[in-house]
Image (tube, rainbow, N blue to C red; front, side, top):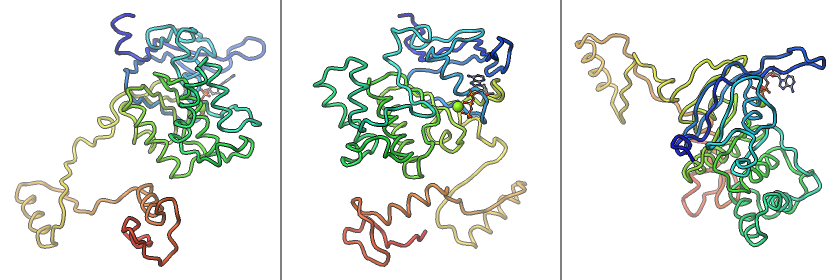
Length: 311
Ligand SMILES: Nc1ncnc2c1ncn2[C@@H]1O[C@H](COP(=O)(O)OP(=O)(O)OP(=O)(O)O)[C@@H](O)[C@H]1O
Ligand SMILES: [Mg+2]
């Protein structure tokens, strides 16, 4: 293994993809001269509107389609080489799973494809089902009965069955409710904590902002920007000071002080929470140990708040 392969999970160089039509004529330039490197152990976001080339990039990395120009390597090997595919986990945009298998059977099936010994599979499958939050009853049901969110969870478990080093997630939160979305994001963060590299494709900006360190934005197949999320979002000419419990008189005094310093355009506000935080807090307050707290009930153990959606 080369020195760079130790620190690089993915290297994409001048990658382009032109889809041809039935007669071999150029139809769509889906990806146009993309170059970037994803470091090992980072969560990298590939952002872009519909049709901007996100899924095309993932398919090229997996070797499912071939580039028109340029190249990509994964963990030091050319994209698509069999030596590397068993170290990759892939959650496609739409999971094509066998509808007549149960969740549990699905994982055993994919585990056997990776030649994972039965004993190890018996250990790994329930752990993975716990990790993605499929309860004991649902994991015994056939996939054709699954809701969109449940299908997404089993899709993710399938992507992790081979304990991959690089995980490619194409729109992982599609079909998930805000709780499922939060759990998916927490899971992505925990994958990073285990030292895994994650490439996350999405057009849901809040999801990407919450979990990714670096992102790139694609538009019509071309890279528009690349960098640390924090740097890209920082409003450099505004200074924000946060403090707790200031009285209106103190706020006024502070405002006058700033004015004496010659600082203008001072805005004093209370920070707002996100709708996701509010939603999660309400759901948590209404649920104790998996049980819904009836409206008006006073929970005994003090974890559930007052059951009202108060601030
Ligand atoms: N097999 C194909 N044949 C022809 N054109 C294709 C094919 N697959 C994708 N395209 C075109 O390539 C462009 C990029 O598609 P791609 O699926 O990579 O976008 P995306 O960013 O994943 O979009 P979305 O957010 O909708 O999933 C689009 O214009 C699409 O129509
Ligand atoms: Mg796509």
